[in-house]
Image (spheres, rainbow, N blue to C red):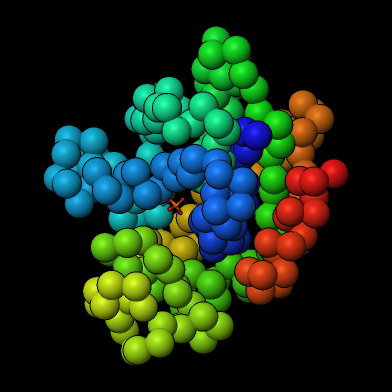
Length: 214
Ligand code: AMP
């Protein structure tokens, strides 16, 4: 099963991707995680990506398409993958189609998470993440056991630089202008599936499994 998860920032793509990985043994491919790791390592890719990410803008297509081209060739993607945060533009989606076609495979579904602007703002402002293991928390709905530190490894939690109000607004604008049109793109390909992303993670997970089992 090869899947794409679509949705505005904070829609729950990362949370649900991790669940799908556990349940179906898929490889998790998150361009956001790959770019943040590149920033941490101080690589040339990271340096270039940082200037876009810090202000909530999309990184240029050629950079992310290059990342995905390498990543989906890796062995762990052979048994299926879930793309979390890619594609985010129509040219990225077209590039993905060409890559998969030349590898003799294709997407099975593009799942769009529907959430209101208010949910997006709330989830992003309340999100804290662990810089060591990538675990995410919501300060009110899913807080860590001990204030400010990761349950798994005790690392102090941080707020992503792009989870500040101005950056959230920018990311929402980017989503509307460049990513939302992908729904029509995948509807036209007959593989769009929509799920209500506003309930708590367990309920969204249940809806998602039900939808994918159909
Ligand atoms: P995410 O972790 O998916 O919310 O991504 C965080 C940031 O990484 C985005 O706001 C973009 O700046 C950048 N990014 C991640 N994936 C992509 C993509 N497919 N295309 C362009 N920029 C991306």
